[in-house]
Length: 87
Image (cartoon, rainbow, N blue to C red; front, side, top):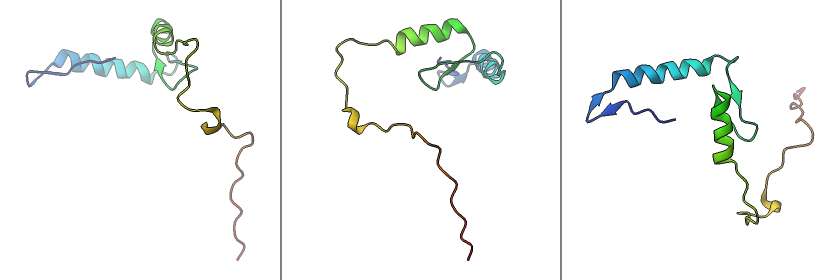
């Protein structure tokens, strides 16, 4: 979402207030809806669905930018904490 806060060098006060209110909505974790395909979070379920359709649609027969051998996979095991030196 893009909210312009300046126009012709002048602050658009109503837009600044709108932006601050928008940020406050994101602070309420009960309203938060997370996208399961990326890191974005939404306040309204409809916005999430629109995002997923627009930004995560799959393209059949798409050629990947790189081969799977170059992808970094999530580790299977959690990393162990470092061993402290007893010396």
